[in-house]
Length: 371
Image 1 (cartoon, rainbow, N blue to C red):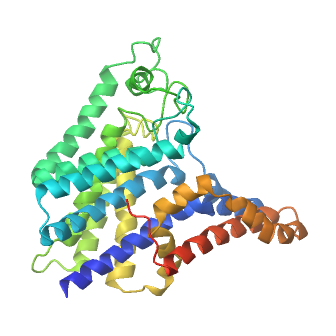
Image 2: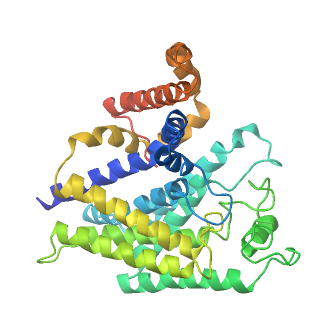
Image 3: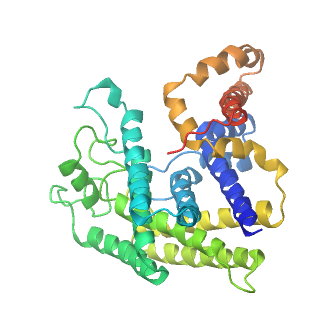
C-alpha cells in the first residue's frame, strides 16, 4: 500500500514537470498571443510575465528553470530509497549520481552546438549543465549527511554566496556595482575560467560561480521530497500540504527581506532569488500534490503528464527537430485565413499541438529518455 502511495506522489511530479515545461514548449507564446488578441489589462499582465527580466526582478518566465531543478530534487529521496531497497551499494549510487550529472553537462554542450566543432565560439555553460551539476552536488550532499546537516549546508551556501558577492567585486569591473553584470564576481569568474563564448559577452547566466547557489535550489527540492516521503503517526498527507504552505511562506518572507540587501536576480542566481522562487516551487508542488494525490483528481493530468515524462526529450528536440515547419504545413493555411490579430494564437496552438502529438506518440510507445 505504501509503495502505491509513493507512486501516486510521483504522478503529481510528472504533472508539475509537464506544467513547467509547457511554457518552454510554446505555452509562453500562447499567452503572448492571447494578450495580442485581447489587449486588456488582464491578458497584458499575463503576457508580460512570459519574458525574462533584463537583470534585477522576477517574472513567471524566470521561475521555469529553477522549478525544474527543484522538481528533480524532490524525486531524489524516492529514487534513493528505491535503490537502497534493491541492494545498491554506496559506490553504485555514487556512480549513478555522477553519471547523470555529467551526462546532462555533455547534453548541454551538444544543445549549444558542440557538434559544429567550432570550439572557439562554443558556449560551454548551459541550462542542462547547471541542472546536472547542481543536482549532482545536491544529491551527493543528501546521501552523505543528515537532515540537520543539510539545512546548515544550505544556509551556509546562501549566506556565503551573498557575502562573497557583496564584499568581493570583480577585479576588472572598473568600479561597477558588485551586483551588476560587469562588476559582479560571478561574471569575472566566467570571463576568467570559462572557455569559448559567454552568453551575455561579459557574463553567463549559467556560469561557474552562480551554479553554487543552484545547489541550494536542488536541496530545497530534496527537503520537500524527504518531507513528503516521511512516515510518522498522525502526519497525514493533508497535514504535509499544510506544512509545505507554511514552508513556502517562510521562504517568501526571508527572500523578500533579503532582497532589500541582495537583489532578486536570476542571472546571478542570488540567495534572495533562491528563496523567493523556492517559495513558488514549494507552493506549486503543494497544489499539485493536494489535487492529484490527496484529492485524487487525475484525469486532467494526462496533457501535462505526457510532457513531464519526456521533459528532457522535448527540450532537446526543439533544438534539433523543426516542429515549426510541421506546424506551418498543418496549420499555416488555417492561420492565413484568420484576421491578423488571431494568427499568432492559431500558430501557437498549432506548434503546441505538433510538439504534444510527438510526445504522445512516444508516450503510447513507452519511449522515455531517461538520464
